[in-house]
Length: 118
Image 1 (cartoon, rainbow, N blue to C red):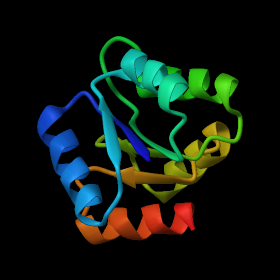
Image 2: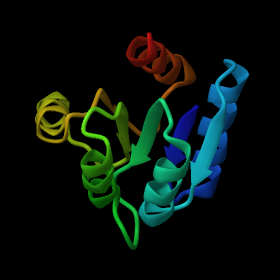
Image 3: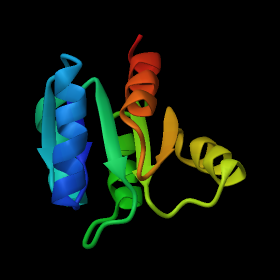
């Protein structure tokens, strides 16, 4: 199961559709607080989390998820990233399995998800 945390409903719906068409089971959270609650409840195999959200940000949600499960597999997504160096810094700082810039292509998303799950 994949937990998708994103406050942008159209983007979240599209990402869910992409993943479900590949056979993945996806649960959605509309913000960081709901994401942490669902993580506790569902214990998903993978979390895909938007970083910039109102209320509890993706960064805050990821930190809380890390306290619950330090080895959790998390992919960060965001429309506000600035290049490869930033991706690497974020991966190292937060332990992300991958960082994907929005908008992303279906093939890119699926390749990364397959890579981290297998």
